[in-house]
Image (cartoon, rainbow, N blue to C red; front, side, top):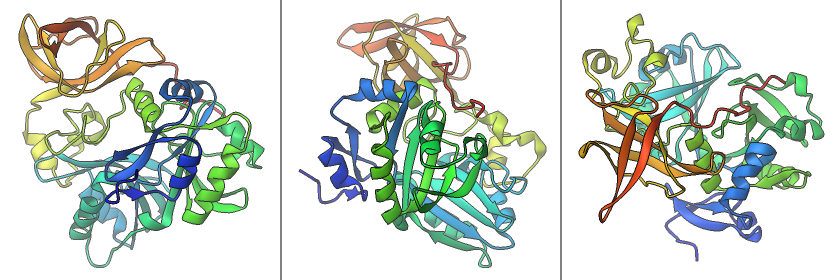
Amino acid sequence: MSDASLKSTPLRERHIALGAKMVPFSGWEMPVQYQEGILAEHKQTREQCSLFDICHMGEFRVRGKEAAAALDRSLARAVADQKEGSCRYNFLLDEDGMVLDDLIVYRISAEEFFIVVNAGTRENDAAVFRARLPEEVSFEDESDATAKLDLQGPASASVLEKLGLDIKKLPAYYCWMNTTIAGHPCLLSRTGYTGELGFEIYSSVEAGCALWDTLLSLPGVKPAGLGARDTLRLEMAYPLYGHELNTGTTPVEAGFGGMLKLESGRQFVGSDALRNGTPRKKLVAVEIEGRRAAREGTPLLQNGKLVGKVSSGAFSPSLGFAIALAYVESLGVASQPGDELQLDMGRGAQLRGRFAALPFYKKGSARKAL
C-alpha cells in the first residue's frame, strides 16, 4: 500500500504494472527492483541496457548576465570557465566547507545554466541558491515539470540509434545536446551513475511517460530499480548523498580535493574553511572476504582499535564478493591497497577485509568512444 506522505513519479502506475517492489526513498515512493531482481538488473546494465526512472531528482534553471559569476562564487568547482554544451560535477557547500549537496551543472549558454540536484536536498538547495544569487539573476525550480530517464549500459547508444539518432553525433562524455527522441523534444546528456556508457534524458512529464513506453518496447532494454542503481554506483565508488557526502563531510575528505583546485585562489562559499582546515578523515575502499555485506555504520578495526566506519556496503554482483566504502581517520591508519582490517559485525562476529584501490570495478564503458 502506498504511503500518502510519499511523493510519486509520473511513472508509478507503470512500475506497479511491471511488478516492481516499491519502497520509500528520500521522500518518494520508488521502485527498488522488478520481477527479475537486483542481480539480474545489475547484470543487464553492465552487459546490455537498462532504463531507470529518476524523475524524483530536482532540476533548477539559472539565467542572467551575472549567472556565471554568481554560480562561480556559490559552488565549489569553477563555473565561469565551463564551456557551453558541457556538464560538470560540482558541490554546494556551507561556510564551513561541508557538503550541502553534490550536483551537476549544465552550461546551456553564456547566460543560462541547468542544475540537477538530489531529491532529498531539493528544497534546501533551492533556498540556498535563492539566498546566494543576486536579484538580477533569475532562479526557477523546474523539477515538477521535468521528467528524467536514465538509459544505461554498453548498448545504450545502439538503442538511441534505433530511434533515429546518429551515433556519431551523440554527446561526448559529460556533454549534452538538445534533440528529439521518438518525436519528443528533450535534453540528452552523456552522464550517469553506473560506470557504463549511458545517457540521461530530460523532457516534459508527458514526453517522459511516452519515452519510457517507447524505450522499453525496444529489444534488449529492461527496467531497473534503485537496488541495482546502488550496487552499480558502489562498484564504481560513486558517492551517495547522505552516506559518503553530508553536512559533516568536506569534498576534500571525500577524495575530491583535486577537483576544487584550491591552489588557484578562487573564492567560493566554504573555500577559506577548506584552505585553512585539516581533513579529519578520508574515504577508502574495502574488499571483504565472502558475500556478507557490511552495512552503513559497521566499525572498522586494526589490531583491535577502531579506525573508521562503513558509509556504504553491499555484495558486488560483478566481482562476486562484498565491498564497502568507509571513512577512516586521516592519520595513523594503514589504509594502502592490500592492508588488512577487520569489520565488527556485532555479537562477537568479525569479517576479514583489506583496503583496495578505487574504483572496485574497472571495466566500465562510460568513456567508450562512439
